[in-house]
Image (tube, rainbow, N blue to C red; front, side, top):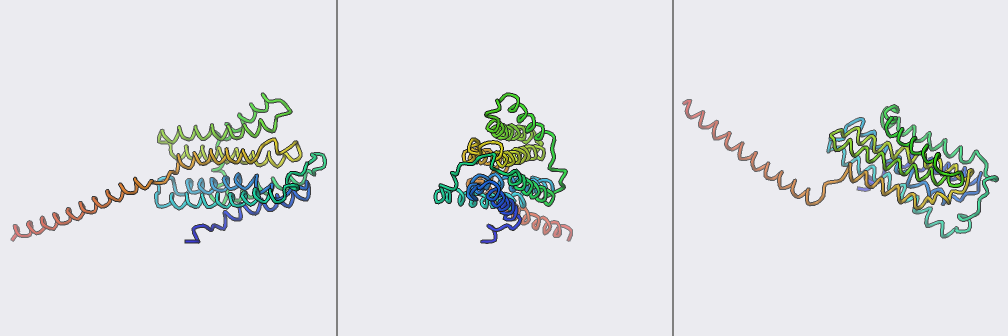
Length: 287
């Protein structure tokens, strides 16, 4: 039973880039490690979860019920790891409130800290995507175009003072748009394209958001992004996707299915009994 809650690839995917980011940002910008865990634990876990599930969709397909259930459970295990780390960072912040709320000056922050953090995160994401399926399958023009167009409009309309907040909100908006496009495909019997567009849209947006968050230490103030609130919004969008595409069978439906299975079993037994009687009658008539 305990093995259900342990997945080594998910653990490595989350802890490796987070560890590098904590060390790099602390040395280059005096950022407390709990802040990185609090703000990036959930977004990173969501990316890992959806990359893993997309690999399943590409390799097996979304209609194999024997695989979808365990894969959805594994998706939630990866998210659980990120949630635990984010919770540790959140609660540790109360203990080290002075260090967490330390005023940061962008001019004193070295570029190599955010750069190393971003490169390690992107490298791990590419490795995970390549392990899950062919790397080229994770590049889709529709969600990529939606994400780029939304960010461009945000840059075009917003002023320079609020550009970080505008970009952050545009990434969330593009994820929502891609999810809606994916659902339209899904309910028009284009199941695989719908799932791919919806999940890849979130992956693209989350990737851009994490990069923006790390760069905001040098370009401005990360507090303006309001990462704790953004994490809740990312969870809301992702939860909507999970229950739209991967909703588990309810207890009532499970009960109905069980009753139907019992009825089918009884009918099969009756058919077999009738077949035996027919065979016996046909044997008697031949004699």
